Image 1 (cartoon, rainbow, N blue to C red):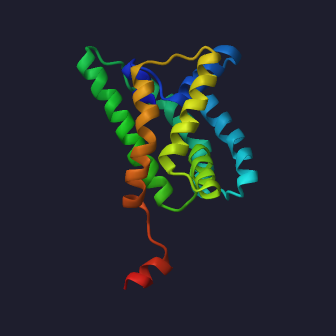
Image 2: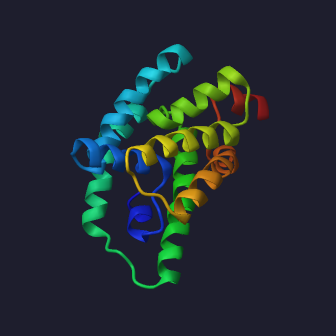
Length: 181
């Protein structure tokens, strides 16, 4: 998330929303990441989505990690370096999402919303994730958040990337392991 911001090519859609909240209400983008993460958990209730230790860790760590990373990572100069940083951010977020959901310790709030809607509707992960991303993007823009080429790239690619990486990164359950053996 911090890499996207530092690329200067547009924030990921959730961070457009977080930035919009920052502009309207104050606090840091990282603080809004944490607050929104906690609030999104309320949307899990009708989906009967259960949090895990990974869910709690996500709410408590990601916003602080973003603020810390923003303090450590500078903005690159030159378009090629900025595009490379943005591409790395999108790819790393797709892999990271596959890894922490696949660990089966509980998805982050936003990803639990995605997996809960997937389970309840039967729609593809890429369709649901893309729909969520576009929804928060519009809300963020209405609040004054900034978007750019990187925002569009992220919004259109994160769903398909998660759909690709999640099966590769998912730890099999004991039942799945015994069926294969």
